[in-house]
Image (cartoon, rainbow, N blue to C red):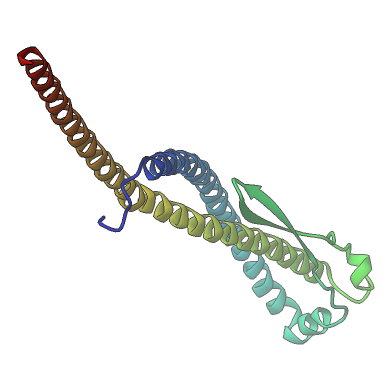
Length: 218
């Protein structure tokens, strides 16, 4: 506190800093509220995506077991290696109060059975198993997308909360303390100036009174 020069210019600067800090807290709180609302929306979607993934996995693995028992492991492995298909995803960036939130979605659509196999070479069970696992992959991609968003939003909420706490608990109290110190010093100086002016005025009045008395004598 002693390093602060208690001048009116510094007092004006601290008041401006206090106003900006309070505006920053207000904006950060609005940002945090928007992120929290978005976070809970994504949580709901993430829970629904997890439920779909679990359901799709259960259906796919049950059918896989039945198809493997009926057609044999070798037939399924041969069909799986027949024609591989790459999966491309598109990542869009959504801006929420300055926070970049990734949105992941598949680019290529699902291929039809004729695009992958000769219908004569594979059975209906194999095709249905392949289709079920494609649905599992789509559900898995949706789960990954929601969890990436949850992680990103959660990190930004923590960061914003730390900034709000730093402003409210450290920066703003420090600026207010400096303002009180500068104001107290300036008020003390003003009182001292008034006291000195009063003394000077009394001395001048006493001097004038003495001069008038001397002139009356002579």
